Length: 131
Length: 383
Image (tube, rainbow over the protein chains, first blue to last red):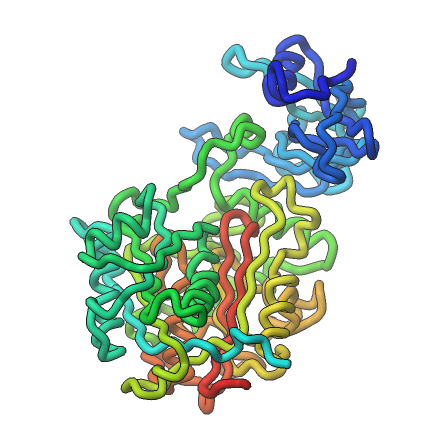
């Protein structure tokens, strides 16, 4: 896949959402300096180039930090929120699911998955090796 | 060659609206109370104010609304909004406007009725589409992530974080204006209700109403007014991210840059600081800022605050009014770092007075560890 090199057509957020709905987690790679970018932008955050290609993310990442939101039981109970570093470099906010929220640890290897929440696709991560 | 803004302007009036729970009073009411007190304090009149600096979360056009509320027509106004760092940053902007002759009397003010309006910290942010799907609890989720990373990288402990809250309370116990004045131990902090691992409710700032106002004039006029001026010796601000996922390193804030440049403008270093007032929205903040501002090495913040290090008998007086953790926190705290710093420099502390305070540091933080602003105030011009 290649991105457009003009400012016409669907913007990078729309491209991301369309791909997510089709089951693909895409990020951008600058055609000029090869920097990987997420969240989607119109200009490379490293060199400013508008020539950003859309590529499918590998999906592998490492947990950079993690915490548990201790919601009251009636609000849903404890839930994880984490920062993960994609293997390509960019860091993003997410949830690590598939294990107890307090079991997520810094340095843990995780992999992207797309869940449906209220009929909307949501990008989450789960520990590598979870079926 | 001293920077032209070093000692160009001074704070000559301060006012605090300290009704921390004031049902039926609006943010503008708190601002007006603080402004009235600051004008009395300075000996100046409302009609003298021709420069206005306001940042609130209640107004789309803060300076335009507040100027109307006060009935003034400022020649210069600035509503630079960088969260809780805004009011410290406004000191620099006011000094610039004054030095350039664009105004003669600058009023910086803030007010909020967050406690009575909503009962909790309210996010004034537009939705962040790459955060929203995870239902983050703003803003604590970001500070909890930063705390977890600092603990992982440097071995900082929950006990060391608790020391920050205990020190703030130790100062607050002597401050009749502080909301929370009861005893607080490390065990109390650790045993309090966990909100967002590893932060308990006692690791978090208060939610109150209130407001503050600060008046600045050029230094040559300051010495003719009634109170001991607090000269702005140096100031700087910097921001590197908006969302916590974009913060390059969760253990290093842009205070490392704002502090360095503020000290450079002032021609001073951390050892020259007699008293420090830093925006302590959460216990991790104080540790991060003490490191980033150069009071200790990166990673040593936990050790620095240990054993009462920043309390009344410690090695550096920090947050001498009790801070956001124990004194007040009406939505954003930054202006209170300035007010308390000025009181300490004047020898007019309402609580404990740091003896012989000559140089004070104020530091504000905005968003989720995003915008950082540092100012150095002194009792004498430094050039």
